[in-house]
Amino acid sequence: MIRYLSILFLVFSLFHCNRSDLEIPVEFDSFTPDLAPLEQAAASQQKAISGWQPQGELAEVVEVYRTFNLRLGAGAGLDEAFEKLIARMKQMLAQVPAEKSPGEDAVRLVYWITEKYQEAFDRLIEKCPAQCARAVCNLGDIKEEWRPALEDFIAWAGDFLPHACRNGLIQPGDKGFLVTSEARYLMRAAFKMRLSGLFNALSSERDTSQLFLSPAEQQLYFRWVAERSPGADWQRKLQAVVELKRLDPKYPLAMSRGIIHYQAGYYEAAVADFEFAASEDPSHARVKSWLAQARRKAALAEKKKQSP
Image 1 (spheres, rainbow, N blue to C red):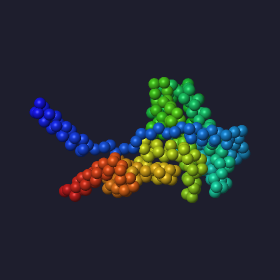
Image 2: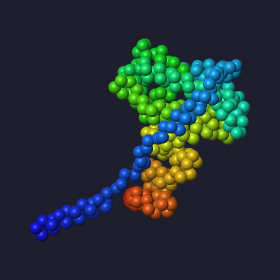
Image 3: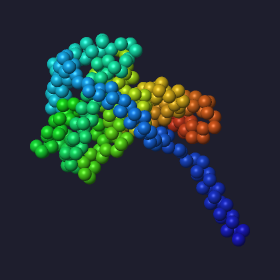
Image 4: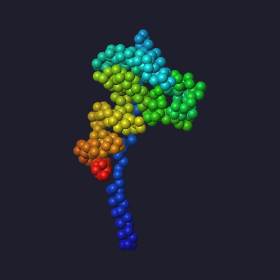
């Protein structure tokens, strides 16, 4: 009996020691966004354009925008259509006041185009079976029966869908595109961020993502970039967590920077980040573990650097 207990104690001791040496994965927690504020933002934006249609020069901007998208979707690249679109958008941006009033035509136009994108996307989802979804995501051959819905979508979104597939926003499934409620709102936010990128190209003084996206949409988008996007590099991820801190003062910026630096292999930077995070919350056990892991990795990297 005593021998049996001794063996059990030895096994437990070895197991306990091994567990203490195990590294805890340095990664972000999974999250499920609250859809309510996203639904409210979409409803508010739809209300802002209720009964509104682009007229005059704005209608011309829409036609130029659609022409540009069709050429882009066909692989024509950035040409005179893009230059014409930029010129028209520059005129619009100059008219948007500093207080960023959501009633201005530039904002309404983005809301209106977003709704057209959403309607075209819903029609594409309905018409595009699994084979079509795989062809779109993998840039394969498109059958004639799928072309009307796809070209309608391309006119409003250009090459947005293949990029969305490559970045994990949407994936083909057994019956077509896999679209959850979260993915729908995430794609909507990413699409509006894409539109704001056209405006950002025109002005270094203003970030139009704050003009066109609600705080909830910005949080969803930037959190996806920082924590989930397979296509975003570490520098873009760092920019995203800074935006998240702007949107939520309680967001753990130092810890998030540490995770990003660690995953990118910048262990000395991760050490500095985790040290700061640990000083902010000394009771955070995972941060302490990650700090120890980052120090070991940094020391190992330095040793390899110095070895002949």
